[in-house]
Length: 482
Image 1 (cartoon, rainbow, N blue to C red):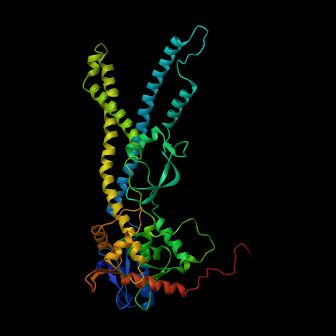
Image 2: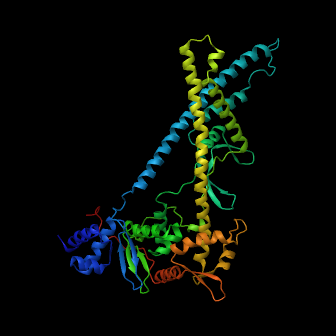
Image 3: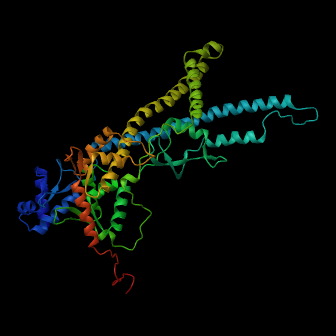
């Protein structure tokens, strides 16, 4: 067993015993191995356990493994529970949408039978003596519309994969999927009635970010920026909170075989030389700063008011009629029917549609309160984006409060932020970006982000001094050749 492996086992025991923060010097002292082997052992532990890297004011690198030793990639109970709830919700949506389809098909068939009956009656009364057509019954176009509605019942997807831009009530632009429906003369897509029914219950599908999007964006950014990155750039790209950004930075080091390095001024940055050396072309991943991509709100239905009123009225009729059946109206109207037939009819025309209609109304009600909570956080994050844009654009790392308010409210299209909104978000940003709030000579409040400025300035200097060549050189050995 080599010294690195021996040191790794010893350090792992120390971590499990309660020693959660180590420098390379600590590791070498504890294990009695040389500094290089101690560093390799710590890097191996970083790959194995959740951790983050910290730099002291004297330029020392600390490997912090947190309050409790946690395997990297192992999900917490909170994450497992969130995943269970998500799977349960998706299963419920799938099953209830089938139920909606069945109910609509049943009523469609009943409706169609009534129409056929009307056609027969109309045809028997509407013809003239020479067999001419006087407008009775149903013409082919009307029949086409009915059959088109019937085919819509089996359309599970209500949107296309084409993304369109929308603007919310506060002026924030976001993307959503285009509705699946017919094009009007103006070129707008008119949502089908069946899609409106599904969206009334579950809401329109949102453009959700890919779970790996941040990693792909970071990899693309590194390829474009000479393979180096600081933690402030992680915050600027992803918008993550300070602790989450530190974890993400460490995960990138592990995932992309990066090396943690420290400048003479004590700035920690990642060196990802191996990541950028390759012949494969970059995919379509575009690097966007956090403030250039607003979150889409959770919309209640995305339907017109007329559609929602119609859908609510239809379900209200079913709910009222089924409740009457449950109260025994069939026994009063058709007392001569056999008891077994009446009992079965009470279940099929009473209990089943009553449960369906109740769920049909209750799901949107629960979603309304859930959406209010989610949209409140989305609004907060969108304000955070606007403030981050101003902070990252500050040349000297200092922004007086009045100047901040003026700059963040420059846009005429977006909502105007008041002083309280700005102060609330800035309290978090001061922590996440290592800033501080001071009082200037004239008594004005001034936000300082010296750590951010130093990191961004130093990483710029590092890039300017690096060779941007990604040439792999000539192939000197090929297994296909003798």
